[in-house]
Length: 248
Image 1 (cartoon, rainbow, N blue to C red):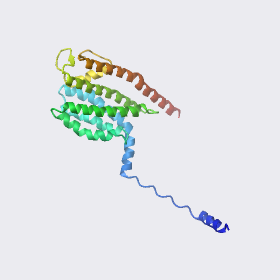
Image 2: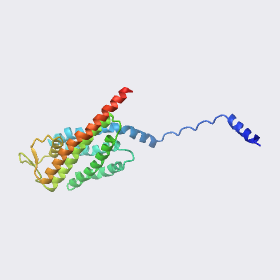
Image 3: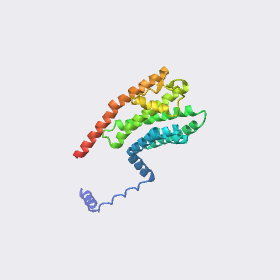
Image 4: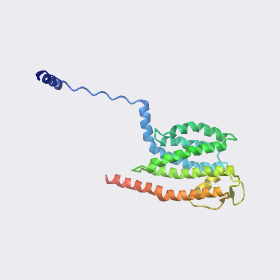
């Protein structure tokens, strides 16, 4: 009774093994996705470089008239575009960056749209900052690129508060005053934001309006908390990752 079944099993066992199916050739979408995943960490370092150029080189040179103002607008647009490659591929902020890049540039170039463009750029910057912070501070192992990404978040805080101060000044023209009582120049609010974030406070630019003072206090506290908690944690994890790598 079992002879046919036994014969069938023996015949199957005698057959040569079937050749495995050839792996499907990677499509351009697959290659693009792999490249984007590989570029995320290096993009953090690139973003930091763009920020440093914008804050410490381009901004001051534009303020003195050495560089044309369009270069300032270019770097303000370049920072979110570089952030596009930092964010996860499925992030909803990535299409937001692409959709708002054109309107932000158009509004800031228009005479009556500078304030609206600034608010839209701040909204995008907040979303980028939150997601970059999650990518950096949730990592179990921290690379050098992620360590630089923590600095990106820190400098983004200065840019965000600069936008807040600019919005307050737009609403209340006398909210800030220089010790020379001269009108504020382009870029001075960024200078004020960085000196406040780092608790330097030279006193040459003063917040006069109560809301401006409140925001300055908030930025000073945020800067100290960031350095004392979040950045310290990232540096500790980076050192731990290096020790484990050397031990292996």
